[in-house]
Amino acid sequence: MTVPVVYSVCAAYPGTRFVMITQQVASSLFINAPSNLVVIGVDVKMKYRGVKGMCKLFRELRREYSIDLFIDLHDVIRTYAIEACCFVSGVPFRRIRKGRRDKKRLTRSHGKQLRKLVSSHERYADVFSRAGFEFPESFVSLFSGPAGFSAFAEITPPKQEGEKWIAIAPFAKHQGKIYPVDRMENVVAALAARDDTKIFLFGGGGSERETLHAWVERYGDNVVSIAEKRYGFPKELALLSHMDVMVSMDSANMHLASLVCLPVVSVWGATHPYCGFTGWKQLECDIVQSELQCRPCSVFGNSPCRRGDYACFAAITPEMVIEKIDRVLSRIKSNK
Picture 1 (tube, one colour):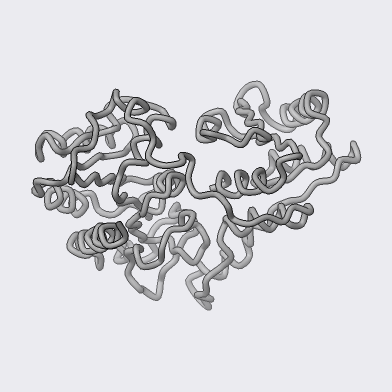
Picture 2 (cartoon, rainbow, N blue to C red):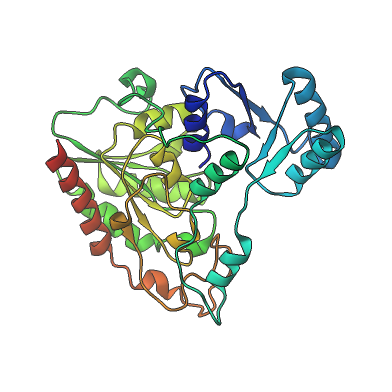
């Protein structure tokens, strides 16, 4: 979620060098990065593990890049260690305001205060602003247009004239975010029956891969599983740039799609867009959710359902999801 804000501030301050520190797996997300942005993927589990590891990282960064200011976009124990090093060394630092107290009020079972909170993107922009960087939201996509076919030729042949490509990412890290698999399969089945539609299934390994493979076997040649092989972010993002729409949970896939300006029909259960985690520039009208008094019961979807039945998903039918998809496709067609 940091990419749009970081790219925007880099574009506004071309004379300033920015050094982005992130975990190794996320470093490949920074495609076509601004020339004044250095992205460093660090191993926080081994080489830079714990407080000592963070202090070691801080010393290396100062030595290599002469850091003048540290901006904490994460607000966790690891970054607190770096902030302590900044304090001792006299390096200014600013920390993101995550609004944990407001999120707790939003998710508690009694006395819930249901109101829209500041988005994570706005929180990222705010910490840069407090550090003295004012900038417009200039980021549109990681690519200037759809990526070249060669970037994802390993995955699928080129898109045919008049063909609609739909990405479906039916999983998330926690159960409270996952639309029932049997219902999502009904969505896949209905879309797969359309002659002009090709479906790309996104997921992880293990049981997710097995489920998606079963759907491919069941619904024919116009359904492709991206989970069969680890293609990596560059290829998968290039492929996403050619999609017409994605169906996603409140998950990382929604944010990946946002990086290539892809509309997302997002399905929400235990969590809620009001917590501030909607994808960059995604539209509220493309959200599918049920208005239950108990929602949201969790910020991240990791809390067990207090009712025990996940009624938040039970009220969402496959037809509702398909209707949202068709509205997005119609909107795209009318804008051409």
